[in-house]
Structures are given as C-alpha cells and as structure tokens.
Amino acid sequence: MKGFPSLEQSTEAFKLLKQLKLHAEQEANYLPRGAGLSLIESTLENASGISVKLRDAKVEDLWSLTNFFRYRTQTFVLAVNLLDRFLAMMKVQPKHLPCIGVCCLNIAAKVVEEECNIAATHELIRISQCKFTVSDLSRMEKIISEKLKFQFQAVTALTFLHLYHAVALSHTSDRKEMLNLEKLEAQLKACLCRLVFSKARPSVLALSLLTLETEALQSEDLFEIAQYLQKHLKIADRELQYWRELVAKCMTEYSSPECSKPDNKKLVWIVSRRTAQHLHSSYCSIPELPTIPEGGWDESESEDSSEDMSCGEDSLSSSPGSDGEGRFFPELFRLQAKQRPTS
Image 1 (cartoon, rainbow, N blue to C red):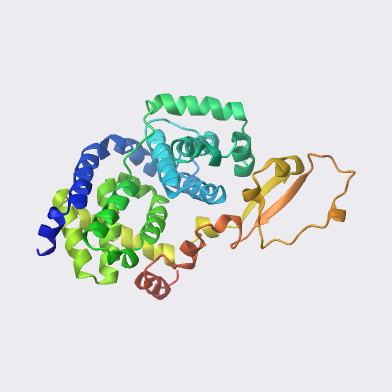
Image 2 (cartoon, rainbow, N blue to C red; image 1 turned 90 degrees about the horizontal axis):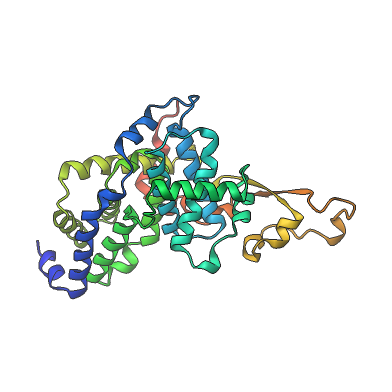
C-alpha cells in the first residue's frame, strides 16, 4: 500500500515501530493468568470469592478515585493491571477487595505520578470510604508487591495506544486534530471496566480501538496505517475482528443512557473537619458548591464530627465528564444504543 514505504522511511516512525516490536514481545509477561480470570468469571455473585460484578465495580471505584485525585490515565490503567494480575493468582475474599483495590491505585500512583501529586495514604483511605487503616494498607502493599515480584512497570493497552497514535502523527501531522488521543483513552477506560478485556492482548485491544475510530473517521490514510501496524505486529485478522466486535458492543452499551458510568456516579464522601483542613486545596475547591457561611458551624460540635459531602455529576467525580456525556463515543454507537429495544 502506498502508505507503507513512507512510514518505513521515516526515522521517527522507525524508532516507534521498533518500540512496538519490543513491547509486543513483552506484553504476555504482564497479562493476568487466564485460569484465574476464568475462575472469577465462574464465581457466583453471592459466593465467597470475587465475582465479575465485584471486580468491575471495584475498577469503577478506582476510576472515580483517579478522577478525584486528578491522577493520569496511565495511573488508572496500571492500577487495573495490578489488580487483575493479583486477583488472577490469589484467592481473595470480598471483604479484602476494597483494601486491595486502593492499594493497587496507590502503588500505580507511586510509579506514574510526581511525588508531590501523590495523595497521602490517610487521605486516600478517607476519600475511598474503606474500613481499613494505614497499617492495613501497608501490609497489603507488601503482600501484593511480593506476589507480583515487584514488577510494577507493565506493558498495557495504553502503552500501545500511545505508540500507535505517535506512529500516525509521524506519518502525517494532519492527523493531530483528527485522531484524538484523549478520546481513545476514554474509550479504553470504559473497556477496562469489563473483566473480559483483561483477557485481550494489550496490542490487540489498542488496535481494536484504533481501527474502530479509523472506521468512524473514514480516513484512508489512517486505515492504511492501522493495516500496517497489524501486519508489523503479526496480529491475525480473526483475533482482531473478535476483539473489535467486543469493543464495539462495549461502546454501544456504554453510550446507552441506562449505563451507570463511573465518572457520572454520584459519590458521597464522609469527611471530618480535621480531615478537610488537611486535604490538598485542589481536592476541596469545588466552584459549583455554595460557600458555607462561617456562622453555620456549630462550635459546640466535636472536631471529628462528620460532614456529608455529596458530589454530583458536575463536580469532583466528573473529571472526564465528557465520557459520560458521550462526547468521546462515536455517534454511531449512541444511535445504536437509543434504538435498542428496552427489556
């Protein structure tokens, strides 16, 4: 195809393609164990183990916490990878899942975020509304670290998504506005809230998102680039088509108004006055909320008395609120969702 020679001749593209090959060789090392994922899929909701529903709900909680603390998408994706790898190798009781989830997010933040942006452990526990202590989190972090052999850096679908996007930009700068990386990241996060996508090879999941977006944009150049990437990584047509169909189905369901989205979920945090005073100012600055008059405080109350902070769709939990509004999801999917018969 006409796009291939120019792609190979570009020095920048050549380096990116080399990185893709290297990551493709390593991606299997960071996949959750298939047998462990199958066990989760077969676990009934009221059983003693972790079910799909529990796992998916926990990932949605991690998404909300990621938004609240303004962590990067990479932090969320890595946290999900750590969570799935751990759950796929250990028999976990549901009561321990909240601590494990928050711990995975904390580990991921330490790997990805600048030190000054990482939330204090006690703040993370307080905001997550989980019933465990700082020492509990420390013990769990040690367990997870040992079981994962301290392999916190991982090759994920986001790794490939960024490289695919960079390859496209190196081929022609005109793709910058057309191929929206933020949009692709939002769609990836929606997929990661479904356990089934943890079975996909990261390179294939990322290419599924890219090819669906290429199809929506009807770009011949991007189509050629996507085909070249598939050939370069030796991804079979059958495998790509299988995951493309699942991704398309996920996007359609996610675009449905009946779908409860993590970033649109109404969260309630119980924050004491003492905690509120020590929270980072950026966590507490909510322009949409009315100012509480100083005279409204009852000075006779205990300093640890709790206040109920309800955060609706347009406040703390809606960091990529555009996800929930559908801006990052193809019109085709939204139309399909609206046309679906209601049960």
